[in-house]
Amino acid sequence: MHILFGLIGLLLVLSLSWLISADRKKISLRSLFLMLVLQFLLGFILLRTTVGTTLVGGVADLFAALLRFAQSGVDFVFGGIVNQGSAPFFLTVLMPIVFISAIIGILRYLKVLPLFMKWVGLGLSKLNGLGKLESYNGIASAILGQSEVFISLKKELPFLSEKRLTTMGISAMSTVSMSIVGSYMSLLEPQYVITALILNLFGGFIIASIVNPYSLEEKEDELLVENDQEQTFFQMLGEYILDGFQVAITVAAMLIGFVALIAMINFIFAKVTGWTFQELLGFVFAPFAFLTGIPWKEAVDVGSLMATKLVTNEFVAMTQLAQGDWTFSPRTTAVLSVFLVSFANFSSIGIISGAMKGLNEEKGNLIAKNGLRILLSATLVSFLSAIITGLIF
Image (cartoon, rainbow, N blue to C red):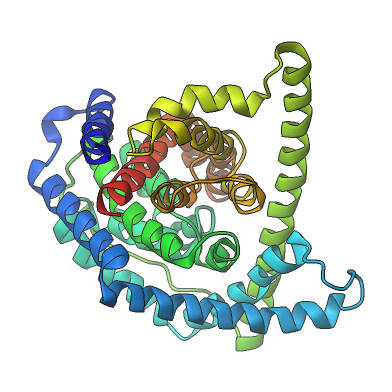
């Protein structure tokens, strides 16, 4: 039965995308079909085959090793502060971002990441029917993050149209940053994190090509990526280490504020209605959770976590999933976990537009103008990835 409802959910997501499309006549059905087939194929490989589980296991072991190395640095600085046997979220989940960020900086300095992003972006443009720059942006967003990716495009920003910026915003909000993947893996099963990364990448292309289709002239479609400013190795390393620390501090501050705000709102709603705010949102999101193939008896709780992710951020929802007393089935856990792995939440509108404004005021205003459209599209990407996971699992 879950397959039937999953297919209905898939049709609903594509239909909603079509309804809010800016130009339905320019939608490329061929590219859509190819990307959907590829999503199902990659999802099946990652979730149901020995090759996929071996690959996921290898990547998970890699990040586990990186997190162990990161913990060495954390223990050196903060050792003795915490009580024996405790595992503070800031030290065990957020601080490793500093080390992962340093690794990213080294790979960029050695020209490994730019080369990878350039040629994979060019190859993807042949498949997804989007521009080369948009394809590059999809890959770069998954590696660098939703705000950092636009730094690598600052030379091209003045020449990008509103439509192209909107597509890039959808890709950026649909994915996550490599520097934070290790932190997700400490809260969710690594298999689901990696599956979400792959599915969201192509899901972003699918939804963007329906919601925001357009055609480009050959001159517009040139891929120009600005080279990094010349730095010594240790200048670069220091910059990325500080960037990673800033990300960790920012996420920590957001979590403190959002968790406290939710606690206050839940208290007020409980006093007035007898229900917490999240429980009420759970009922609103339950039908959507049900259409991902989740049984109705679990849909309200799942809907509550989905809503929490949308109104706060993915870390808050992941933490509640990891630390809560849930009795979800393995398939429900897989579907929900995949849904949570993206930056699709209200605060991301401010993050993306703010990052853009720091580089180009005019383009930042265009992103802010289309913020709700971008968020809705990115949320549809999350539902699309979750539905495909439910159909395959």
